[in-house]
Every structure is written in structure tokens, then in C-alpha cells.
Image (cartoon, rainbow, N blue to C red):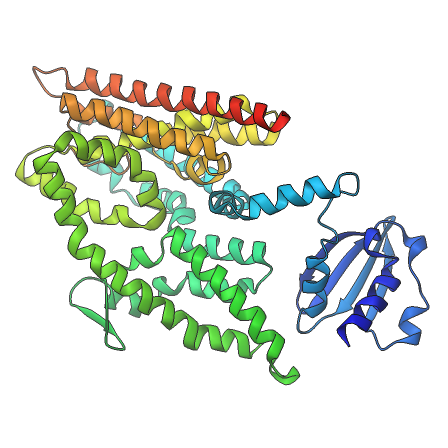
Length: 463
């Protein structure tokens, strides 16, 4: 049955090679055709295909009613509208390789989010500069930071990052051609007041007898949101394929909300509970027994912790450090990780020949230096895997230097950035000097390594 339908569709479209672009939205599959003269207009009259042909602005559009997305999946599997007609084999291989890269997929998810994230980052940086200037020009810092005007501007700058789980969920669903509104609801689950209250940490939480970590931010981490939407998209496709016609578009979301999302919570909950019990103990033990190794490892893996939402467990440790010791060695590790990401992003921009990517990389490097590393991590370095690995190595090198020289921070800042270097000042020591040397070392190491690795990768592709 489907074979006959596909033959009719391809005959109507003028052959597989005539399909330039393929999309699906609202139970409709749309195609942009290369040549309208190849369209066989006799097909709709001779078959029961629910199809519409429209020519607008010199382009020919073919629209098919596709309730179960069967037509779209079959056409997509045939690589219609996704390959270059000049070099189909090479392009298909490249697309296949990209699909295997988790880092590249995450970068593709974040790519359309960059205007909102970079715009919000610039506002946050401007506010940070204003607060820094106010420290040296005014004896009453609290009057600015607690003013309603400043707090409203700060909330505007934080909005894109606060709602990042929803933005990531929508972008992931868009890339996977699944229901973006269902994804938005999943991404926003942890913002529900009742959920926030239950996971506030005031008491132990169990869901259907399964222990859950009292850390809502953990469930909203980028990695778990993307993996949840990815798995939900497969559930949606299978359910839509087998659902009766009267339940299509309804049964899949109901199954996702009623069964799949609770299953995800029951899987992530125990994982988070296990991390909650062991990670603080492990970090504290490592800081006590081998502080140099601890700072080096934190400098290397902090970006990965940010991706998985594990960095939230470090903040209680930082507060404990500051209260007990009067200083923190975790904050320097976080800062050196950000600076290493900036160096790798700058190198990626210098190596690239794509104007848009170069612009993004340079902006991302700047925001990472000033405390907003997300564009550098997700949109630049994950897109160039060599840059991401170089950033991890650069963070480890800078962290090793910090560990050996016992670099400390004496204040808890809102974000780790170059603007917070004054918090490393200590009378009678070279702590600030060693801070600057360690940051420069991480920046240069990650940048040079990323530049070299990208050059090697480019040469290997030419061969």
C-alpha cells in the first residue's frame, strides 16, 4: 500500500531528484521542488492523494496531508531534499558522521538560541561593569544593587538563562521534527510552583516509591532535557504510526506526559540522589587529600559538569569553604575553566573561514571571559570538537598551576569572570599575580592547542 503511495508521490513531484527541500509541520508534509515543469498534474486526479501544488515567487511547493508522518519519514529516509545533487555520496557520508556526534548535535540545538543568549549576555556584562564601577565610585554599593531599576534590568538579562531549559527543549524538538509545544511543557516542568516547592530540599522526596534528589535544577540541565526530548520524539513517532486516525495528535502527547515523563523522573531521580550523597564527600575528600589534583580536575571537567547540572552541588561546598577557611579554591577552578573555553572559542574563530561562525566565535570568547560561557561551550567549541577537547586540556593546565601555587578567592561572586579578579587580592602575597598567570596560561594553552588541532583536522580532510 505504502509502496504504491510513494510511487504516486514521487511521480507527482517529478522524481526524487526534483525534491529540493522537505519539511513537516501540523500533520502536513511540504516539499519545495526544483523544476515545476516536471510535476505530473495528472496524479491527483487519478489517485486519492490529498495533495496541493502551488507556485509562488518562482518556486514550486507540493503539500501533502500526512497525519501519521509516514510520507515524511519515507521521503526523509530516501535522503530527498537533504543531499547535494553534485556530490550526493560525499554529502550523505558527512551528514551521517555529524549525526553520530553528540557534541555536534548539542551545538546544533543551541545555534538558533544564540541571538537571545548573546543579547542577554551583553546586558548582564553591562550591568556587571556598572556594579564594578559603582564599587570604586560610591561608598554605598547596596543602594544600586538593591534598587528596583537595577533588579528589573538584572531580571531581563537573566531571563534567557532562567528559561534556558524551555528554549533548549523547543530547539531540540524543532531539530527532531517533533511536537515543539509538548517539548516546551516538558522543559518547563521544573518551573511549576508545586514541583519547585516539593524539590526545594526541605524534606526527602519520593515519587512512586523511588527516591528523588531535591534539586530541581538538576532535572533541568541541558543534557537531560536534550536526551528526554530525543527519547520522547521516538515515542511520538511510534505512537503516531500505530494510533487510530481519531487519536492522532492526541494519544502521543498524552502518553508522553502520563507515562514517559514520569519514567524519566524515576530514572534521573535515583541518579541525582546518588550524586547528592557521594559527590560532595568525594570533592571534599579530594580537596583535603590532594588539593592540586582536585583543582586540576575541576578546571578540566567543570564544563562537563555544567552540561549535566552537576555544578549546583559545588555551591554549598564553596559557601562552606568561605565560612570555615575564609577562602575558596573551587572558585578559581571554575574561573580557569571559563577562560579556557574562551581561548578555544577564539582559536576556532581564527581558524574558521565562515564569516557567521567567526563572528559568533569572537562574541562567544568575549562573553566567556566576562562570565557567560554558554555560547562558547555550546555553540562554538562543541561544534568544533577539537576546540572543546582543547578547552578541557587548557582548563586542566590552568587548574594545575592554581593548585600548585595555592591560588585562592576570598569572596563569592555572581559569576566567574575577569571582572572578579579583585576578589583574589590578599595583602602580602602574590595571589593576584598567580591568578593572572594561571588564567593567561589556560587561555593560551587552550587557544594554541585548539588552533593546532583544527589545522591538523583540516589537513586530514584535504587528504
